[in-house]
Length: 290
Image 1: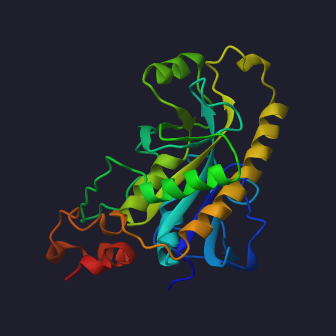
Image 2: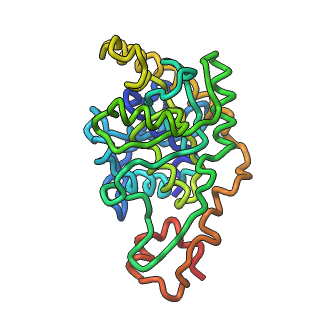
């Protein structure tokens, strides 16, 4: 089934895309359980897209509770080939100010692996994807051009450090992350990027800077109201950027390597694949079973 070729994942504050038309809601069942919410299928700039609020409508899931595998597998079932993900982040460097946009090209994992599932594989089938470059550069190009189009202060490149949460960093942690050269900090995008690569879906993050992390000398003067105000402004900017990026991507050829990420990554011989696991992963490995 191809309901949409472009998927949009909205983060904190981004629970809808107001410019969508011809809207329908769809529940998608996956072998990994239910996604965060119903998908909103609609037309944006002439292209059918599948929108999903990462934390569910009303923000019901903590970062640890987000059903990442179900979300990405459902995108695959819908025929999605490219995912644009929006995420609120804190800044770890002076040059990334509140209201700026960052399009990171690297991730650093500080989550707890036994708590968060970051792979579809296991249960008799082993795969090791290449993840040196976790972001699709073609999607990054589209987001960068779209940021210029609405005249926001955008930064291409940088490292998104993904922490477990839900509490924010201590000052000691924040300063350590800065000393490591990390650029922005969030709680969700690392798992999405890994799973999208395993599902052979292009993936890129639009990181919305809402505040400086607690390392900044002005942090104590930042109020919740200020952060919410920044988030509200950033969400509207993100909606406009994603809308323009969809327009740029609609009909564009997919020349990257994301679509064949599993070609040489599955180590288990097909004749040894357990039937139950093969059925479970059919949407992503079916084409590799000979």
